[in-house]
Length: 92
Image (tube, rainbow, N blue to C red):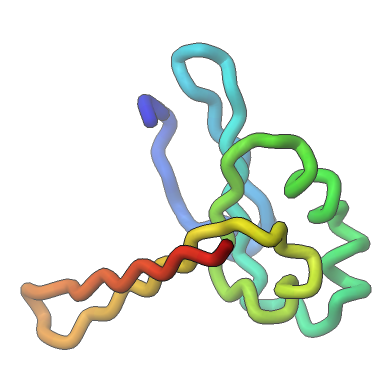
């Protein structure tokens, strides 16, 4: 997507924002420490999702009521040290 910033999990910040070369924004969430939908709303996630920009969400389970009707669910598994398995499910 052209992001030149280093990409890392936003474990402590909850949200990282990246700029593309065309000055568009990409949002990356890590909801591992979030326990309730109220906490998700408190960080303003509904506004990010409504922004029309790409939103990547780690540990999205608690945010499922806010997800749009169309999204991609991507699971990355590491069954062996040198191998990754990627499963993609399209929700419509």
